[in-house]
Length: 388
Ligand code: AMP
Image 1 (cartoon, rainbow, N blue to C red):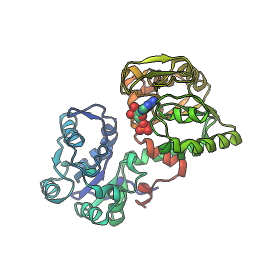
Image 2: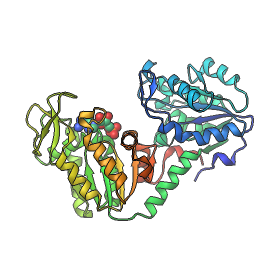
Image 3: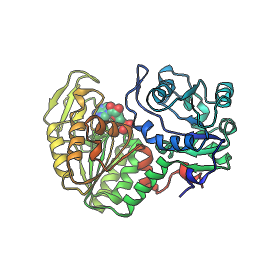
C-alpha cells in the first residue's frame, strides 16, 4: 500500500489534494454532500498540520468546455458555509490558480475550478499534468472515486511529483475492499444496475468469480432480457453487448452463479412520461422499462435476505424520478433492515441509501462506484499504484 499523508512532512508546504467532489449540484446547490464529508478527514488533517491546501476535483462530464452547471464554485461555497473557509480559483491552472494559491496562509484552503474544463485532464496530456504539478510541493490522492482513471490529476501529475501519498479516504476504501475480498461470507449477492452493460461488463465477469447470485436491474436489464428473447419495447438496449451477455451466461453456468432478471416492470411510452405497471416480463411495443416491478422487487429482496454479503452498484430504475424510484428505495430499505454485510458503491446507490435514511445500517458506503468495481476486478487501481 502506498504511503499515507501521515508519513509526509507538509507543514508550510503547498499540498495538492486530488479529491472527488463529483457531487450532485442543482441550481447552484449541493444536493448530497457524502463525497465532501468523506474527504474532510484528510483536509482537516492537512489544515491542522499547517499545509497550504489546494483541492482539485472534476464534476460531471463537461468534456473540455466551461459548462457553468458543472462549476465547483457552489461546492467551495458549501464548504465555507458548513465546515471551514474555502477560497475558490476560477481555473485549475494558470494565473487564477497561481494567484489564489499565492494568497494562502498555512492552514488555508482553496478549491480549484473543475479539472475537466480542460480536455487535457482526461487525456492525461503531459503539459497539463506538468502545469498541475507546478502548483504544489506535495501530492496527495484522496479521490478514491477517480483512482481507476489514468487522468492528469490522478496519474500524470503523480508521476511527476516526488513527494506523494494516499489520503485517509483512499486508504480506508482500499483496506475495506481488500478485507472483503480476502474474507467473503457466503452466499455473496451482487446487485448490478444503472444504465450501461458496456460500462459494467468487466465487473459482472469478475463478480462471477466471487458472487453466488447476481441481480440485474436498471437499463442494463433490457439487454439481458432481449438476449433471453423477451420483448423490450423501446427500452434502452445495447445491441453490441448481446454476445457478451451470452458469454456471461456461459460463465455463470460453469461457475454455478445464479443470474436474476426482472419479471415485471414499471413502463412508460416516453422517458420520464406517466408510469404504468407491466405485470408481464415482456414489454409491449411503444413502451420502455424505467424501473423493475413489484414482483421483481419482492423476489430480489427475498433472495437478498438469504445472502450473508451483498454488494450493490447501480439503481434499479430511473430513480431520480419518484415514479421510477420505488424498487431502488425498497431494496435500500431491505438492505438497511437485513442482516447481511452490505457494501454500497457508486454515487447513485449511495444517494439512494442516504435518501432512504438507512445509511447508518450499511457496513460500507464506498465513494467510488467504478473504482470499487475495478478494484474488485483487478485487485489494484492505477491512481493508487502510481503513489508507490
Ligand atoms: P450508472 O451510472 O451506469 O450507474 O447509471 C445510473 C443511471 O442509470 C441513473 O441516472 C438512472 O436514471 C439510469 N437508469 C436506471 N434505469 C434505467 C432505465 N430503465 N432506463 C434508462 N435509464 C436508467
